[in-house]
Image (cartoon, rainbow, N blue to C red; front, side, top):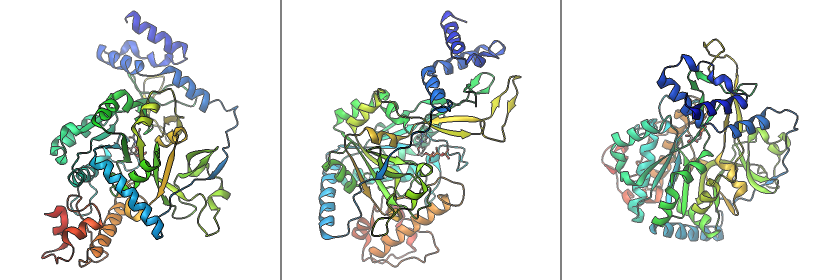
Length: 467
Ligand code: UTP
């Protein structure tokens, strides 16, 4: 062991984490090097803070003061529609000027889906079976064509799924995007702790680490050096979404327009909660600042509370679609403004004192993640805009049931059916799958402009991709 490594070991012992060296002497040189590299990446000061915050039970939990958040409602009258047109004009102007880049967070582990590859590679289009990545990339191609300016694509990946994600893009010819416009940003990893606050070993020579949450994007993007490059290119706005929503209206100009007109730093789209019991985070004022209140943190009385017209007072469900100013990202990414780390208790297989791997039947480990939306409280200006769930949100989270591939495909088919009806084409029966590729049309208006009035000669599948 070099003096440098001995000092590292001493630091872990001092932090009462010396057990991670328990099997060190039995490891091969390669294994030792891997373990040491992992240990060097662990921020012991952060681990100490996590233990103090989440294990010290003496502090009563903070109960925040809540108030409903202010939301731009769906346009329901002429004035609102005129305002929306103005926002669209501003948003489109920004897209034509090349001021917008797209940021997709895709570093998650797809545990609930039980999918053993990057979630973006999951086949989701109802007929063609195109992957999430392909649908998103084709939307970018179509936008580039529409506005005459390519949109840079930033993909947040984890050290675990970086290589397979890049390979997927390479193997598919980058889905028509210029490779130089696609940027992979690697997020950080965090260790899990056992009930006593000790780091868990996944193997004798390997610490259990998992991605640090989508909130890790602030630091990862700042550290990548890309922010400066984007700025030089004239980009000042990021359109953000999660990889698992095939219905996202990428770079929606109306949303971008609202964001830019109000000089917002962090804007978000919300949908009306289906009912008081829907387990989704809601946009609200939290201790006087904008924030997202998780379902479990919303007191039952507030969950059910309604305004004079019967709408839920806390009914603005966040769908994790955002617009950011680049400057806000740069400010947060500096790391001076640390986001909170949220705790999740999980079953984490670990190596016990004898060196055997134990697969627990009950949650034994604490995993930590930071969340993008915690940045809301730090924004100088925010804008929240309501949108229709059926048009913009059909995430793939679970293997079956709610928010599963089945519900997502059905939601896509249902939306495309409305586009076909709006274009004056014969509407396929409700039970069949329907698909309109992004390269044919990005929305109902575009479909109408392209094929409206025409009677397709063959089955509606010919609409796919405009082939
Ligand atoms: P989710 O937690 O909903 O999805 O993250 P997941 O991580 O893919 O699935 P589970 O929780 O393991 O079942 C929402 C979005 O944030 C990204 C995910 O890729 C997804 O797009 N994410 C999540 C990251 O980019 N990094 C993370 O550390 C966590």
